[in-house]
Length: 442
Figure 1: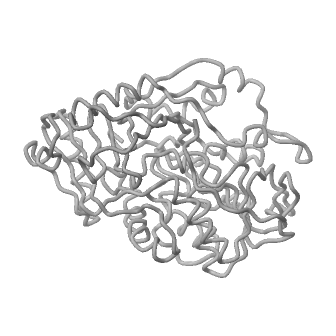
Figure 2: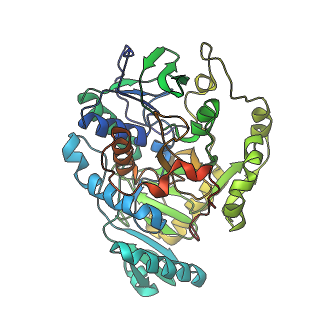
Figure 3: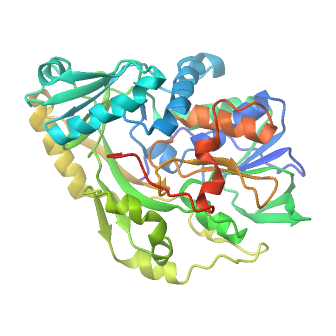
């Protein structure tokens, strides 16, 4: 089931030309459109379904610096600054609240990993600190569990996935961005080895700059342009509760459950580290690239073999641009949630918080998370195809860093001084032999 997402108006007619065309109406694409429009560029935002319809509305809604890969920390610090002023700037509610964020554990090996992360993170002057078990328990009144330790960042926060991307897209439209929903981008036209146009199901937009911010669809789109992007998708399941007593205002990640207080009075709940990965022919083609990450051990990710493998056998990458593409066949990725995982998380939550024993699950859903072998995104120009830019592969971290990721992409496209050093997010690492390894314990 698809979670509710605020709907916004589309523009009826495609422009003949635009300075920039953005493919993908998730939070990254919407934020990039907004910041480009602020810079004075004309932008057409193309979305095959509706704004925020896929992972941008299906995530936990956390905006965290805590436990970030060090390569992402400068970006999330900038993002939290942007989140803090965004409601006032755009005149709309994104749901952002600076509530702090808490991790707790019973595992001493995990405590050791946190300590190593803190050593690396100190250079960024974060406000994160390690808590004793007693200190962690004091921050979770009403919780019956005992913890070995906690990790707390008071400057982290939360926002509402159902509100944020649509609010940013609506703000972008006010600045002149044209928005085209239910309009799939089929591919690119090039002239002289450079981007010249985007072909959509509704017509052609001439442009010299295109951003692919298509989330889980990015690899397939780019394969048609002979651009290599190492990316797989995993399915993560989430649910929301009916309105319930407030036991904790800040998001918390605990063994067996994770929770975030919602503006509607309920909670968004998931299972920390749990996800399903469906084996496909394309996954086998990328086995070598993803093996270092897999070999680190991800016990919460369950590999499954089924219909996705056989559907993938017939999926090519050279469709005609004057005929329906794979992106029109599936407007919104809406996979079924893993109810076994969610029921376990719900039971764990109720055991930990007796005050929540009587609450009910209101709605469950799943989303496809676009992951890279090193679990950090690509935000970059593509060296081999001038005019093409990518912002994808956010590996489950994209919502929180969405505003700054969009600002960085806009800086790169506009040729302005970048918000942060873009080198860690360069596309070339996908093809130049760089060893792609995620942060320990991510």
